[in-house]
Image (cartoon, one colour):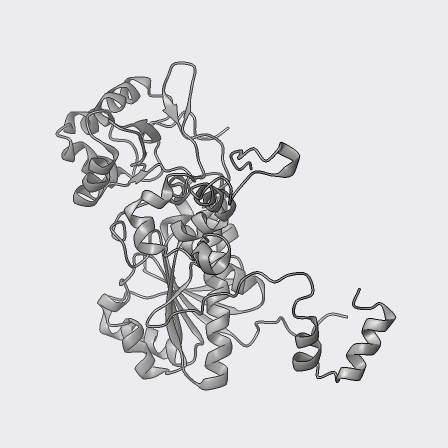
Length: 410
């Protein structure tokens, strides 16, 4: 029997988003929430990004914004700001799916909006989050997976480094975790009348999704008599187990002086910034590319130039260059080395093995001004059976014993 209305039919969400992070409200819309996408008059250029393009619109746009309604507002005008505030007065959630602080700069940050609606749940989703040395860096979805150690650099038959086929984890997991956090906030707001502000980094989500590998490498830092391999492998401490953009040039992995970086200057503006930053505007003048999503595919001459350029600096120097010149260059980490990354160290305080049995990554959604409680140690089999039966279901001791004698509890 179908429900009379979708489970989130009573939830209204105001979305301010650009590109993939808008997926955070896709999950909510799919469950019946009313999602109003507030766009600038020129629209979200997600409609022109990546491929395929279906009757003038990208598949990414068609998928991520299904079930939503769009309203255009020029938020540079005070009248538009008033309309946005009116939307918020009757909403449950505001989502800022872009660089953190974009709405605050317009007078529409959480501190502004909670004055209008004390129960509002405000969620910021971004590439690297609101803290850490990478917080202001421009980036694309693949960056969060290279940062998290999910994508290994590959080489073609001519020795050029390229992005191999891989699942896009962070760009999907970030919105999913964000949606969980939003719903938790809404549930509490409806109980207490008090909203909250939270944030989620797509990079955090990518690392969290790969917890098994990174936590395995962390476990292997402990003595061999404490952490071994599986009995089936004679306790050998084996590494944890688990056709891409091979032809790209302006969107590609390159060797640095001491490792690899991911270069993502597929937008013309970013490409020009890069060329100017390295003193090679001749490259931009010769191969300017188109405005959006131009990877300069198959351009071996340009790729050879870039290969030599990227070898002139260390990965850390290229990350600093990215921040200075507003061109997206991302770290390429591995599950084993990611814990050494300064962004990781800022964002992820480990749950220690002393209290949890293993070193673990915390839940990546951050409630601003609050701390989530540490999870308890994983239970043994049936450890909380009696507790659940008595405190959650209200069974008395006699009923619990009847279940035990019947074999229902094993």
